[in-house]
Length: 191
Length: 337
Image (cartoon, rainbow over all chains, first blue to last red; front, side):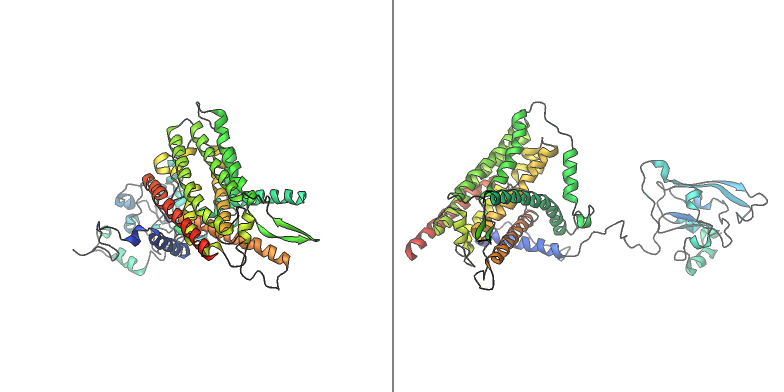
């Protein structure tokens, strides 16, 4: 039988030699091992000061994008909610009134848009389903909390700031390949 | 001279307390480093204020006393442990001393001619602190811990005493000052008594109830051992006394086997008396820190003994070896002198 790892050892219940019975060599080799660990690189990441490096396409907290003129892109079609395997997304649609053209890009918009972060599994299917490029997942982590209510993120927290300088960069997620994939009519979600 | 002794006593007391306090931090730091972590580093720069935070925490904890505990003995336990832990420091020579205005001040509180015997007497009383604490708690785990502690300490005291007898035979004196001065320069006892040193080291670990001999407070079997029922500063005293014991026993090991404050080339004419005094004390503290580190190193390396293994090692291995060591030393002294 092949050993599973390089470090596996065959054990036996043979009698210990006189040297092994002395126990001292064992102690010294054990202490050498611990001393090696004493000087080795530490596994700890000092969290608040130093954050673990995430992948560029790490999937965490969502963001609702605005377009170049600062209008909400979401048209409350409900495809994200439909695609969501955890049923974490809830929305209430509303009609755009005259004079609100600078706020909403489409004639229909989401008056309420909520994601339950406790249900969400951060699979990214909402992002994949969205035909308006309105919802994306970001690298930012959902904060912990003591009560469940704080995990239901409404538009106040999901929507990105209107200020062009404070927009959330999602260019790593929306690569040309992704855009091409979204236009592909052979894919189920684009039919 | 009385004033000097008073200053010496107070400073030794303070130094032992501060060192014990910071040993708790270093213990945790070193434990962390041995386990590929950093250990506590949040309180103050590099975690330096951690002992203060721990102390404040212990002070503000609830003072709990079991309903059927013996009140007097319950308080007596930690006090006795602490007292005994501090007593031994009186006889340790801390340095060759300095000369100020023609008077030589030797850094030792009391040079009693039965120094080694005194330290043994004090260490034996140390059993009572644990025994009384465990008994007064009225808890089966505490009592078991106390019983383990007392039988362990009594067993290992024998081998310890026998291993020191060899040193005493070589020096011809029980006074620690004579023992240290007999190891002048690099003429340390460890070169003549390596076996005795190992026996003494093992016994010192057992006497301090440190891992791998920490059966009296074995968490996995006895909850907390003899201090299960203690809380707040009473618990703090027990834990604190353990670190003071470590410090003092490191000092004893350095004094008995590693030449105390002696260091090589201390006779060279470039050094004045005062320079030797200061370097000597520093050297002693370096030796003590090394043995303190060794305590922690061993603790985070070795697993705990089983109780029968502990007794087997103490009675059937260490005592016979110590006796053989003593006889060989005696023969060598008889033949060559």
